[in-house]
Every structure is written in C-alpha cells, then in structure tokens.
Amino acid sequence: MGITLRGVNYTYQEGTPFEGRALFNIDLGILDGSYTAVIGHTGSGKSTMMQLLNGLNIPTKGDVQVNGVTISAKSKPKSIKQLRQQVGLVFQFPESQLFEETVLKDVAFGPKNFGKTTEEAESIAREKLALVGISDDLFEKNPFELSGGQMRRVAIAGILAMEPTVLVLDEPTAGLDPKGRRDLMALFSQLHASGMTIVLVTHLMDDVANYAEQVYVLEAGRLVLSGSPQEIFQKVDLLTEKQLGLPKITAFAQRLRERGVAMDRLPITIDEFKEVMRSWTN
Ligand code: ADP
Ligand code: MG
Image 1 (cartoon, helix red, strand yellow):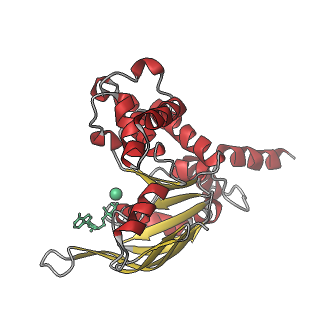
Image 2 (spheres, helix red, strand yellow; image 1 turned 60 degrees about the vertical axis):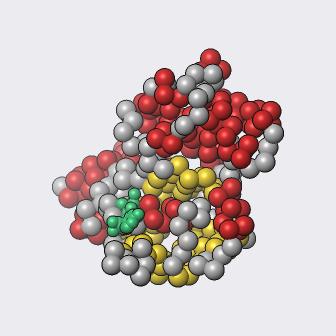
Image 3 (cartoon, rainbow, N blue to C red; image 1 turned 45 degrees about the vertical axis):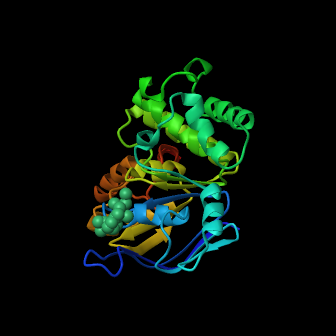
C-alpha cells in the first residue's frame, strides 16, 4: 500500500506569534519496498516531513497515509500509535536518545513498551543487535561506554526492534568517518533487500545515486522536483542553480562533456561510467 501524502501542509506553533509554515501542499507517493531519497537545503522541510511520516508531526492540513492508516489533523491517538510502530524514524544523532543502563535493555525497551514480555523483547533485541553488527560481549555494557559508531548502531537496533515496515533515516551517517558511513549504508541496503521500505534524507549525492530508486527535492517547504536519480542528475544546470551538487562521477563526466566528449546521458555511478568508457573503445 505504501505511503501517500495528499495536500500536506505543516505549520509550527500555529496561531501564535511564532507561527512558521514549514511545508506547503505536498503531494507525493512512496512505494512499498522502495528506496526513496529526500534532498534539499537546511530549512527546506525535510525533517518536518520525516516526522510527519511517523506521526510525530500531524499535518495541519491534508493527510498522510501509511499502509492503510490515515493521519490528519482529526486523527485519534490510536491510529497515531499504529503509525509509530509501522514507521521507524532514525533521527540525526540517534545515539542522543539512548538512556537505559545496558545496551540490551535499551534495545528491548521499545518492544516491551508495546506489550512484549521481557523475554520476548530481549530476544528481539539480541536479533536486532546482531543484525546491526553489535557483538554479544557488548550487550551488558552501558551504551555510553561504546564508540560513537557503535552507539549509533545500538540506537538503530532499538528502532528495528519495533519491527517497522518503513525505516525513515534523517541524515543517519552525519558525523561518522568514511568507514562508519559505508557500513551503515550497507546495513540500510541489506534492510531494503529484505523488503523494508527505506526513506533517506541526505545531502550526499553519491548516496542518492548509489542507493535510491526515487528522489524528492524540497525547497523552502515545497516539493520542486522528483524522479529517478538518473533523471534528476541529468538536470545539471537546475541542480547547480539550486546548489544541490552532483554525484562525484557525474560532475567529472560533466566536465568531460564541457570539453567536447560526447555522452548521451551523464553517468551517476562508477559502474555507469565504466559502461560509457567501454562505448568509447568499441
Ligand atoms: P530541514 O530538515 O530540511 O533542515 P526542517 O524541517 O528542520 O528543515 O525545518 C523546516 C522549517 O521549519 C525551518 O524554517 C525551520 O526553522 C522550521 N522549524 C523546524 N523545527 C521547528 C520547530 N520545532 N519549531 C518552529 N519551527 C521549526
Ligand atoms: Mg533536518
């Protein structure tokens, strides 16, 4: 059934002197099992939109549908709770939300809170910790004794422990070193391959090119562009004007094109670039 946003508006602190409209008439769809990227400058409304997907924000106007659950300004807490379970939201720096005294307890907290017994919850927690690559010897440690990358994995395991069907990732690799970033991206790719719907907010165009199937571009609270990464990254002038950047290999190919190298389409991944090179030697 996927996710649909229909005419969604979101205003912070409506009716107060601090009122601020963050999203304007957003219509979009996200297919079940797809990998969607959301890009746009700081303040364009990405995080506001991600929080609408899991019911942390409720639309001021319009509605959000997730797997048959509809959320609008009139929704009851029960359907919002349903949405929270379906859609796992990984914030930027999710490790700041760890709070239990052991890693295992922290990850088991969510399922326990949603009605599982301690044993069931801890069994789910072990499984999810293994999935994110946290070894057993760390389960009884205090989360704050772990490295930054490990803490982030524990936080993500805590979200996976709710067994969501959709995983929303708001700049999930911010602040990690290149290896930590690659490993996490590989984990999300694996979750996607196992059938999970992935929504990724990022400013890394290489990640968009390498992983996403669909891209939405936000600008000042409005949806201004959408399409596959291949389509989006052909619009070099538009993206340059919007200062959104290109995948590294696309920028390189574009410079070649400017120097007279003919290319029907700009490659967006290394594999696509290799194909372009093969066509030169044929
Ligand atoms: P992004 O994630 O793309 O950087 P946000 O969704 O965080 O954008 O912000 C969109 C707009 O909403 C910005 O103008 C921002 O200042 C405003 N905003 C975000 N969070 C709040 C909040 N809690 N209260 C008031 N305004 C907010
Ligand atoms: Mg944000």
